[in-house]
Amino acid sequence: MKASVPPKLIIASRESRLAMWQAEHVRARLAALYPQCMIEILGMTTRGDQILDRTLSKVGGKGLFVKELEIAMAEGRADLAVHSLKDMPMDMPEGFDLAAVLEREDPRDAFVSNDYASLDALPDGAVVGTSSLRRQALIAARHPNLVIKPLRGNLDTRLGKLDRGDYAAIILAAAGLKRLGLPGRIRALLEPEQSLPAPGQGAMAIEIPVGRDDVRALLGPLNHVATARAVTAERALSKAFGGSCQIPLAAFATIDGATMRLRAMVATPDGQRIATADASGSADAPEALGRQVAEALKARDASAILEACKADA
Image 1 (cartoon, rainbow, N blue to C red):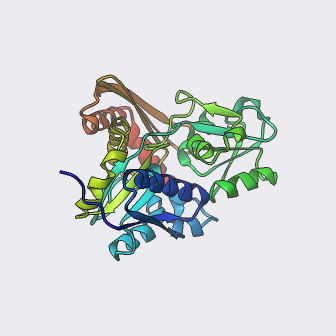
Image 2 (cartoon, rainbow, N blue to C red):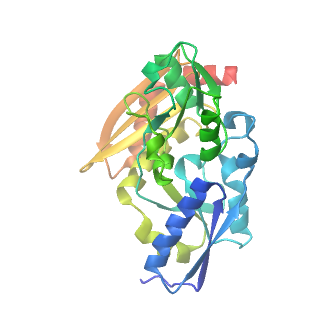
Image 3 (cartoon, rainbow, N blue to C red):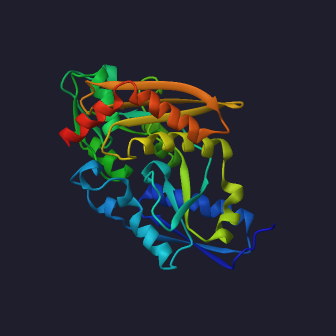
């Protein structure tokens, strides 16, 4: 059945430069498909954008970046919202659903520094900035000689803190730097074997209110099936552990033909205890693979590691 095209659509977005790039990208894709539809962007500041002096794990987690956008949709001020998928809670709030996942950008972490070429090149005691407990744990495990400090704010704010000399290096998502035309800031890309990505990293997602099947139908051409399957496995694994940014957890799925491989890790923030798991299964059953790898992690002391994380929180 052909989707009915409304005269107007409104996209809710955070107002950071990266978030607006993502919303503009979706608007351009939709405008190309439905030129008769007027598409506007409603820029908003979220609670997560306002609280910059504490880590996300201490102030409420991923939902801080989406709540205001969901209120706008619930009140009818917006029809859809565009997010970085890794900012989305694993349990969707009642009344909302993920309608499309766009093709993934580079999922890797990026090493950014004005003075050093890699993590290995940093001297003892050098300060590395990251907003992620996952990155913190992975860096601490491999480089216990480095000092890891929290880094909050949007992409430009974080780069500004580096340029001001607050940090010798910072770790960011490569996808954001590439989307904003800043690949030149990347000194080194951290391969998954060195820094396993977060669930959904590099993917953009579109959220809609439940019941808006008209909007879902319009978004169908934007959904990238392989990416959607991969992130479904990653998010299923994360959900098995509570889906919180308060634990250092990584999950990264790749697809080769009909086979999906899922690698995952949980750790204590200091990197002293790490559990890993790696399994392959049918690309048509991503949730089952996510649960399978979650069980493998639990069999390798992951539950005890997570209890240790909660005790230290």
